[in-house]
Length: 97
Image 1 (cartoon, rainbow, N blue to C red):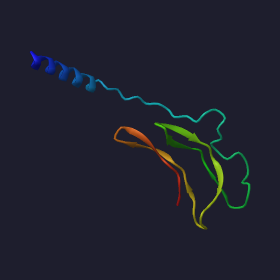
Image 2: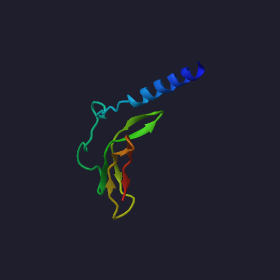
Image 3: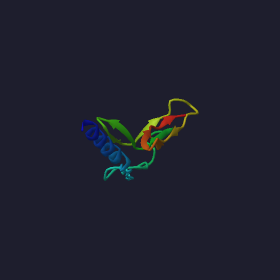
Image 4: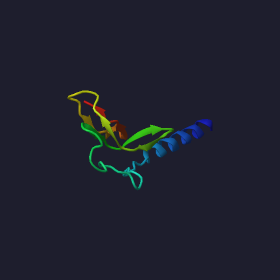
C-alpha cells in the first residue's frame, strides 16, 4: 500500500512540474524616471550613465541615472542590458570600456 501512495505522490509531483508556466513581463522604470539625460552636460567631458537595475533583497530595484566623468581618456560607457540565462532574465550592469 505504501508503494502506491509514494507512486501517487511521485506522479503528482511530476505532473505539477510539467505544468510549470513561463511568464513574460515588461520591466518598466517607475513613473518620473529620466531615462535619457535631462539636459546639457554639467561639465566638459561628462557622460550620462543611464538608469539601471540592481538586485537587492530578492528583487530588482531601480537605480537612477547620473552624470559621471569617464575614468580614462578613451573610456566610454556601455549601458546595461537584460540577458536570458537558461530561461531566466538577469540584469548585466553597464560598465566603462
